[in-house]
Image (cartoon, rainbow, N blue to C red; front, side, top):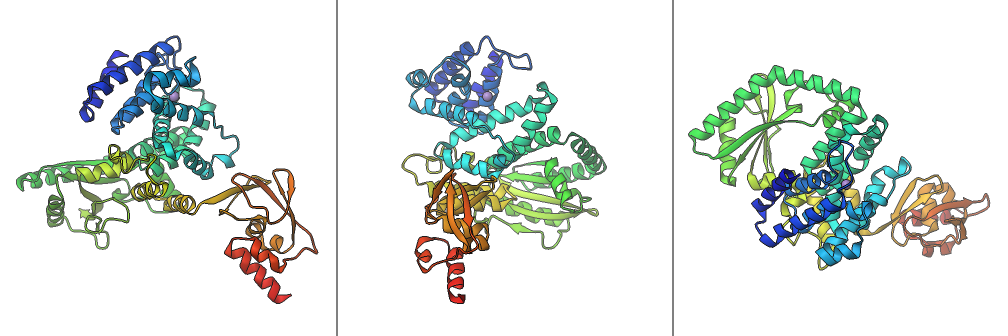
Length: 474
Ligand code: MN
């Protein structure tokens, strides 16, 4: 394990040379190592290998020292005799809170299928977004567990993979960790739908083989041309993650073009060079109309910046993305690209709204499911309440909504005949103000109908409109 610790420390020093921090990380390792010493992972490795790997994943996204320390200790409160007070005594309240936060997420069990959907992610996020680092540790924890899923029983693998797809992939997207998201998604695909995964893997391999020469040739030509123009750069190409390809095809999109499977990325030092490279690419390859996007002059409403162009290489379309190293960092790491920027990371002085705004902005880069992000944005900023129907469907309403709003939202007919409510097993008046996670049943009767005073007892536009309409007509 010593070598793994050295890897972690070396990585950390590259962005945080603070000697005191390094000493604390070593201390955290020693304590965790001692506490877990009699336990082995299913892989047969000493347990400490797990927290070490989790910390290393976080060091790769340049997490701050407290996060690394908490990552090393993340299983100690749950699995050993160590208590939070002791942890706080040694490493301070802050680290203790982080570890405690991770432990609490672990305790949250997602019993039903419905609960494990995006709603849960939202709950998770809303409950914990004060400590965004907790979520990063949890993500890294899940990533390492997914990497070592082979050691679990087959049934367990599927279950974990599904949960990862439903909960942790959106979470990673949400936090803007594109790299982690991709790896989680690919691993989940592999274990959740093994046959489809194999199938896609084969096809991707085949397509890559057929086009490999073309792509490598293109990279070579670009390298040479950029060198001749004295533009320092790095070029690489990356395969699209298979699960996304799978989804794309499930949506009946055609999938023969290589640009669906790979993109060439060119990283350069500054913006000037981005445009120089663009000019060079276009002088070498004919560009495909309508596909050029300049997210540098006109960044998306988020911070994402890059030039995208699609060009013909022979008769194949290839997408080329050109950006600076810093832009690439934001694109890959999302929020963590700003890890050391205290203005972005949540702290007590910072408003939730600002924090969310930056998350949402950064996120919409990586995230195709922009609805998800926008939903969260809206929900958090407008303060909605979530209640459940008796059958477990969740209903989302603005804060201050009452039973009347609930009934109309479920079904206008129920609204128009509303008589009373049952909330968490208790009878309530229809003007009852809903609270988060209430379980609500609207009771309607044939002769029930809206009264004038209902207008003052509801919040949503929809309910008010329906009530007015009823009053006018009757
Ligand atoms: Mn763990």
